[in-house]
Length: 386
Image (cartoon, rainbow, N blue to C red; front, side, top):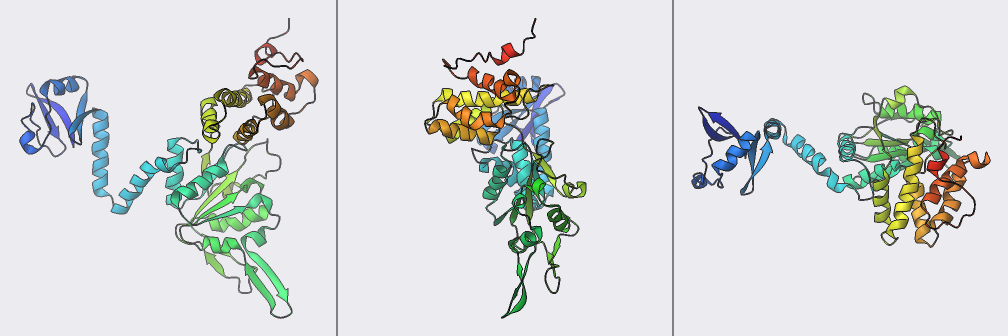
């Protein structure tokens, strides 16, 4: 029950959404209302607030919150039952998000809404930021049939998406459908198209009609009769893509293809989120080591945001998790960085190289470093020479 406070002819009144007046100081107990004290109501009125009855207690809400809740109640009255259930599922879907999935509430709810509506979703973001994990988390949360296709690993898109024609002496020519054909005919399936930006251009062409909301079909032109297969009801496609000059093995995707997707950009984790994720995955590693790894990763990301970054890429979450795994297996922070992090950075240029700069970052987080080389520190390296 929602109750607004109004002043009528100098008298304070509490009125619910049905227009009933709620008596003060216990006089409404006969109607089943808990006591609403007038002094409490007067103070709430002065603060621009009202009340919501939660259980057997009055909870204060601002008038804006009351208006919003009242509007939501009115909408709920006018909406079909299925729509109300969908909205309720979306709003509570954050409870289905895995602890390892560090994505904001709004983006998670948006993902779930798009999946429930059968939209095509494209997850974009830097390599190793959790795009594929997010897509698989959506599949797990929805508990639907799922199919996985790594488009970046195939050089024969027709065989992967349509099928193959075979010939044998006994049966002659026959056509074998690809698993993708079965996938698109499975109602409410979630189909993961991994590494879309690395796919062969022919894969993009084949998928054009499949992903188009007004068409949604696949033509089996390798088949003798060239049948047309309609995409089943409720099928959702989730693609992952790396977009940017950094990813040289990727292909530029046609704008018409990209427009067939809802774009969801994965954010990089901040230092606290990175540390929290590592602590969840490796609870037995000491806190200082996990904070050191998160700090190293965060510093590379901060550097990439500067106007003239001294490195060409940041350390990914995938790499930070692997680094924590090395520490768990007995490697030191310095040893882990040596075998895992440094090889990612160019060593050309001596003290001015990317690798030296990253070593400077790592040295900040190694207590009592035994490194005899004067690598300075990040702050010192930024000071101009006299």
